[in-house]
Length: 224
Image (cartoon, rainbow, N blue to C red):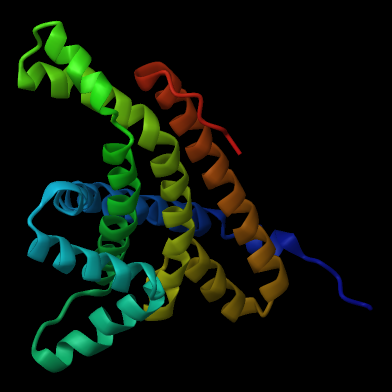
């Protein structure tokens, strides 16, 4: 094999790569934080809602968790215009990530709700806590400690999932690397550099989430 690696050609475009990495992170943050409230509502419905509403929420979650995010992106970007609804490429990706977060986050949060033991609630009632105090001081701390590691891991997966945005022309990290390689035909180097950037992003995000978990919720989340 006479192939000679020339990473300097790709690294010369580091400002664009950094911009792409930041865009990947912003897309993930938007998808997560907009989707989280929907996940919470769905989890509450699936835990204690009326039967008919539980079935609707269950069907929604089942559909989204058993179909790839890429199909959702295709549907939103290419399918909705046929119905007269048009989203730009950025909002298309955010909407797809919000849908994924609402479904996967629902299952994570539902697990947190179900993990609260009746005895813990009864202990709060014995101490004379009001319903609001029981939720604030008994239920929520338990749920947060239970679901935080899973939600932190899901955010890392969601960040990596933003790479699918390149398929509709979004210049996030992978899309930027692909466009650079298309100019100089150094695809191998471009994708190796992109992989390195993803490792840095996930490491920084994992470390930050672990520190936040230990500081705010006393949760010992793994960095990797």
